[in-house]
Length: 166
Image (cartoon, rainbow, N blue to C red; front, top):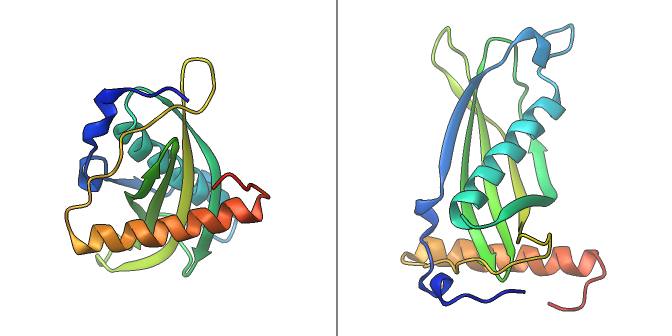
C-alpha cells in the first residue's frame, strides 16, 4: 500500500458528507407502486461512493460490502427519495459510510425514515491495489463515537470474512 505524507493531515467527516434527492418513477417500482429495494440500494451505493471519493480524492473507490440495510417503511412512486451519507470510519484503505434514507410525500411534505445502511468502500490506486487514504480528523464527541462504532463494525466484518490482518 502506498504511503504519502500529503494524506497525514486528514479530513473531517463533514468535508465529504452528501445529501441527494431523487423522484421515484414508475420504472423504479413494481405494479402496485412500491419502489424496488434494488432501486434504493443502487442510490445507497452511489451516494456512499460519492462520499468516499470526496474523502479519498486520488483513488478509485469500490464497494466492498453493504450491511445492516434495513427497509423500515415502503417508498412509493411519486415520493422523493432523500439520501444522506457521512463517513464514520476511515483507516488504511477502507471507509465506512453510513447512509440514511427518507421518503417524502410530495403532496403533504411528510417525511419518514425508510432505511439505513452501512457501506464499506475501499480505495484503490492506479494498479487496482488498496491505497492509503487520509485519516479522519475527529473534532467532536459525536465524530469520535461514530468512529469507534464504525471501527467495531469493521472488525466484525473482517472476522466474518475470515480476515485475520486486522
